[in-house]
Length: 120
Image (cartoon, rainbow, N blue to C red; front, side, top):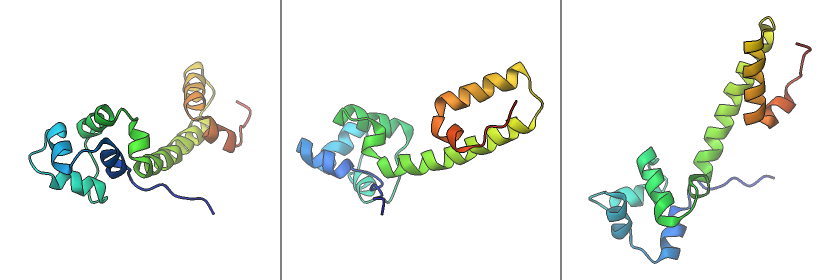
């Protein structure tokens, strides 16, 4: 059975750094530590600015700080990519369509491999 990552590990990183929730809140530009608590206990997702601040504070990429959220976003994006690739294959072949397919295949090789590749 595959293990599922927690939505985030910010509490673990905060504790390793020896910081309090209030100190992290200050570094994030928040007035109250309750926001930090909400992140740590999976009650809220960070804004883009907050995600970048966490990355800077802990010198760790966002997908490692918030792996569960990243996995969910990745799964949903792959579904949409798969759907778009299928729609593109249904269109008549053009150079523009081919560039789109090549770009998507480069960015999402796993999705491309799982699709049947019809002859363009």
